[in-house]
Length: 565
Image (cartoon, rainbow, N blue to C red; front, side, top):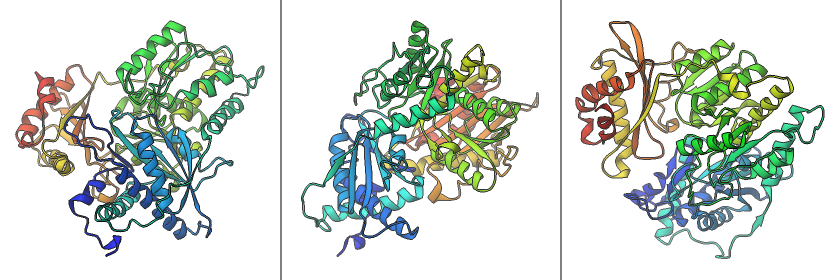
């Protein structure tokens, strides 16, 4: 019996459950309460082998493979403690699929993609081993070809194949091979990537007095959170003349001892704010673990992340591309929409998930709708000019270029002044509800809960609530609902609704309910336009939906109950 004929069953499903939208994520180290290790070396090996086979078939379909040339795949990783052990399994799997393996060592996710683009490297594909902002016990895989990141459908195909291999290996089938260690070539990609970023800053600033050191006289503090972002300090900023005194947590440490590298993390932003004010810096930068996300702190100590970061990038991009469409996830506020439109831009709200937002921008451009910026409120930001790649370092490069240009033009106030008129919600709250029971049933139960929310509103069991189908946005095609019915493309079910005060005929606020891609829980985002509105909405949902529907029998609503007291 060959591998293709193996019945997968529960054992193989453990591999399929590692899929996390367009990525693979799992528990790689013991120590997480209620979660067993599932991202094992064997799991990584069969997924890597399946990716190599999928890549070869994909290139053949596109007529891009030149036989008998061996496929060249680069591999990078973040500093997680499980990285070296899982990396060896990754190398072995790629080698089994007939790929030449190039080890970049510690790298960033955007640099992995750029390894398929930069002339000296030009690999056929790349894999980044990271779990982004998740705990040190987790790890995962992100996949790239020259065309960009893989889709959820691509990764589903790879995991289906890997599931069969996994079961077959445990049965002693389909092992084969010589048993010799794979040949892995070590390469220095990060130096070339850093030079690429430096060249962009020098060329676009074009400093009239010191072209090669355009950041001379500027102070920039970086908080890398012990992830992979430290390179930006010494290999980009300092080489361009910046003073980086006071930068934080630059050394990679897979235990993340200070705080999780995450521009949404309150501790990360607070520490960076303190460093900016202590040093009198012009800018503070916060990276996530693998540097595909970032946030900044302005010279006055104001945190710029979430809607504020999207507004700042919108102001910069709209100055360069007047009238462009800007795509964000559906957690963005109405105030952000008004900000974009006040500058002549157009705003498309779309599904939560960085890949969803980016793919929507790609689709709009293909349809003839000029779309230069796609951003999630989490800090993922992609630009058309940069291969539609969510690159936290590139986004900071754009902000730094604007900062220098403003200084050269004699404009005071720094980059924070560009968003001074952004109207923000009176309140913004995120609550999470864990799905009870075995993790393997969590996705189905979370989907059931989110769909029940939609049904309750449609059946008028939540009077005053209206589903937001985004029909009034610039694209006007119901983007917020159009893909819940296409399971292969859906990584999480979600709905956005607004609550109206029937007496005053005005919107009180917005709720966005979705199943988490990363964990067995449901995220409840609330924004209120009036003080006390979030508690009012939460009370309404608690009494008239969570309890009335019986969802509290398999969903832990304790966070909601604590909030409404």
